[in-house]
Amino acid sequence: MARYFKFRSLAELEAESRNLGLDLRFSDDIGPLFRSVQVGPLRVGNSLCIQPMEGCDGTLDGHPDELTYRRYRRFGAGGAKLIWGEATAVVPEARANPRQLLINERTAPDLERIVRECRQAHREAVGSDDDLAIGLQLTHSGRYSYQKPLIAFRDPILDPRIVVDKSTGRTIDDSYPLLDDDYLKRLVPHYVAAAKLAHRCGFHFVDIKQCHRYLLSELLAAKTRPGPYGGSLENRTRLAREIITAIRSEVPDLVVATRMNVFDCIPYRHIAEGAAGEPCAWEAPVRSAWGTREDNPFEPDLTEPAWWIGEMAKLGVALVNISMGNPYAVMHVIRPFEYPPPDAYETPEHPLIGVDRHFRLAGQLQEQFPQLPLVGSGYSYLQEYTFNAGAANIRDRRITFVGVGRASLSMPDFALQLQQTGKLDRKRVCRTFSYCTAMMRSKHNELGQFAAGCPPFDKEVYMPIWEQAKKK
Image (cartoon, rainbow, N blue to C red; front, side):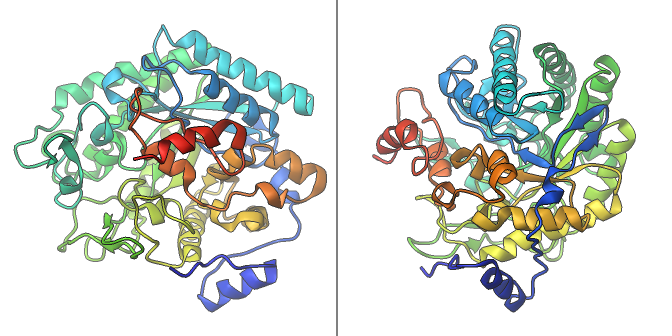
């Protein structure tokens, strides 16, 4: 498979962008990255965000473990001023893997330790944490809950990809039960309780997660679900609206944010080793994908996502992190990559097309909501040119924050490097090898989940884990 990232200079990258007809912009002036931003009552000291990066390294009962604390100490010491904490389940059955964090009274003291050590590391590195904002992503994994899939509606394209019984290979069929309305309604107080605990632990904001086809994301696309949580746009946004409203009412001092898909696309499949992914079979109209044209599911339609962002802003949501795709089924959309994980397809498009899609859709929404801080995604593929693109997007008011995901695992101190030297250490730049994703997919150990990190650039800790994980 031919590789795409052969750029030895920013000029070469810009030329390739022009050849592809893309609107990728770059700037040698990275000053815009260090502008402070007001997010509701919070003053955030720069425009650099560490995205919610799950390490899959908690304990089996949902507590953080030593690698979890280490990761947040490294994030805190890295200089980014917006640290978006990872997916943390609000109820036990909602965990995506057996080592995902869980928030309850028992785990709260350890979550508080995450905040405390993250802030201490930040103070030691930069002198003050007065302008540091740390959040926690509250999640229900829905159809990707590890104990069993918990689905909101029947998706004729995605359901055949979801295994219900690993021993038999059975997938979701028409006899598989949907989550009922009473269950969904009972989730609201769980989210409120989680928000209260997060506030008590010292988190500055909570993220009501609505991305990547987890439960609240799936409900946004539930056009075929009957009842109060499906069908109309008002119904599909009902549960998230009830959660946001209740948290704003009961925890008024806590900032509410959301990471939300604005384009689902449809699932792709792995045909053969070394082959590009191919879209699964579909028929128009596609009524199971959010932010997606029903007559052409490869094209975004921002009508509904834009409406919902406007409604959430009215409800008091102060920060929106823009994302898209599904990490299990359409991975080239969520994270443009050079190298796929071992069990995945090769990218079906030039990765720069995926980067441009992220920037273009986020830019359109930022233009529509100029006063609402938005976090952009899709940057890591650009490697050492990530922040030239981020600075240009901020300069041109296409985004408020530059979000860094995978690249923060290999180089958590990217913000300090940029501020002190104006450039990155090329020897530690994420090359999108997808080791971290492969580790997240690996389940064949006594804990049912390997910890995820960056083996190439954090060798001492993660290379031994990778050596075990890659043994099938």
